[in-house]
Length: 191
Ligand code: SF4
Image (cartoon, rainbow, N blue to C red; front, side, top):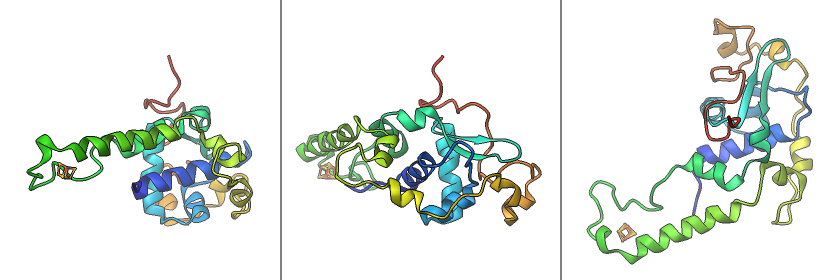
């Protein structure tokens, strides 16, 4: 099973933000460069992460992107489910639809395999991925910390065309609508 590119980018961004100090709030452009993805892709993904309540955009001088508490400690399986959406692993209902789709055992087996895949991620969190406490033997934390340093108050120094053209030029170049509290998504604060 292969995740979408958007999910991959989202998890890279989340891991990058997870290792930064509280006063390190990078712009979307800085995060995109740090994790090696195009800015435009990163901007779309950041917007989605904000909507889900996983990332927040802080305003003002020194503002920028930060991982929310829910994004840091929420179930990785749930995050990936939200990012991937529901649907078959293969295109049973594509156009033209598969003629076997109403009586196919393979379809059910693939759905169960897909759910098993997500379930294996359920016990993990983004924090686990960067602290070396998850399984898999690797520890991306040192690598993530070794990526280009994000300057404090980086939004002030960002002279990218995207941020310069923004009418809200005092806001960070997040590529998404800045928000105060986490978004209304499933990872936002519970009522
Ligand atoms: S053979 Fe089964 S799993 Fe494959 S596309 Fe057709 S219905 Fe879906």
